[in-house]
Image (cartoon, rainbow, N blue to C red; front, side, top):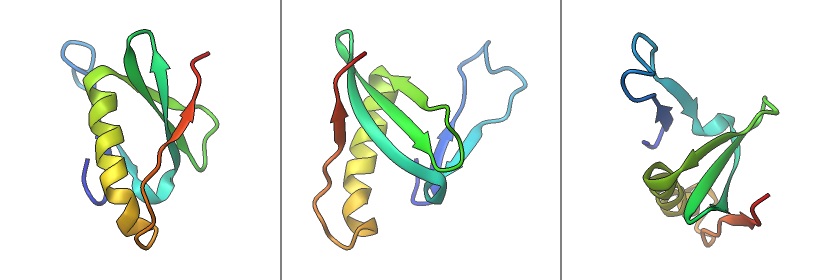
Length: 88
């Protein structure tokens, strides 16, 4: 995660030969927090796509924390509150 966007990649051996997926912040509509089993889930909704991307565990925690820290500077200093939804 950077000021430009989010880079996702699969762990070996699943991502062998596949380049990382880069999601620029300008293409992200929302990042919401859900509770899945006993851990957090981050759900990324993109502006131009209907299929959300879900991350669980440590990856979700890192994304939610980084998003909350960066949100005030993108919204002109407003508080960083994540949208919360109940699990399905």
